[in-house]
Image (cartoon, rainbow, N blue to C red; front, side, top):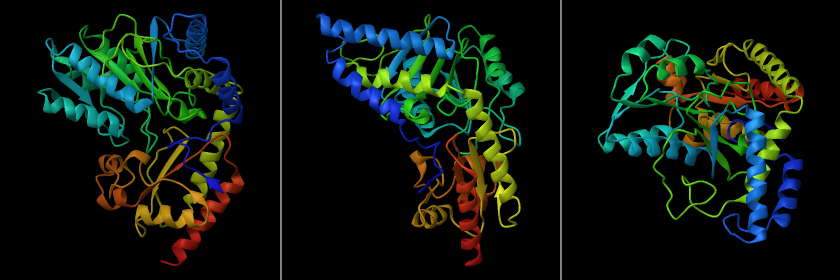
Length: 371
């Protein structure tokens, strides 16, 4: 099997899986309980939170554990919008966001919120001058992800944050699902940060929303206080602890892992550039873990299915929108419907080898010969 769909989800690290089994048996108490078993679980979660804060170099930020980035994005957008609805009702975003952000913002639109889309340049990067013009006293939230999950477009998060901070009532939310565990970014000044454990070799079903301590949110799941007042329910202690372990393991030989992915991306790009039928959509400035291409003679769905028959696994769009006929992100970037309908995403890992890349390229060549 050749797995090249790491941006959709990663295989769980065997060390994380064994750790999950261990803590599942060790911490059996409900962390909301006041007896000793519950207190032990609660202390373990607090210790995990301190570890995550240290790894991510957080300052004055609270970790709200969720079921994953989709819930975190919903909580961030709806939680802020509902909390401050009496003060301001404008939300700003881009065309390159994950479906959980777009859907949440569109829902708020139905409730009377005004939505503005900030312009991007021909590389998909936010136009900072346009953002300055869009933000006003009625802007409650700017939600812009650090990395687009289909193309790998990196946004200038620190510059965006500085612009938002010039408006005291405006809040900046950043979906960092494709960044956490893959690249180094200063998170200390960002108001709200979303991510999922399964993007960095953790177990599916757990993620987090990191928020500045001085921010208030309207909870989206009600039912009493848990590890935080912003998200009710029995804390998933083993999942939470396993996420901390997965993140810790990602930072072992971190630079070596990143450099390997960058090398593999460069090699893959070079091999694909030799094939005249292929248009590479990801620029060299994109996160190296993602390389998006279009093959106009093949629909994206057909390419994914044909490669899967040969035990090679990639994506057409994001996994959450794989049934769509076209990639909205590619269409926004290229304004070319054919490229948007024939785009595929190859996502890489520090586990990816040149041998796997060679096999992928050879299979694509064989498929093109039969067109």
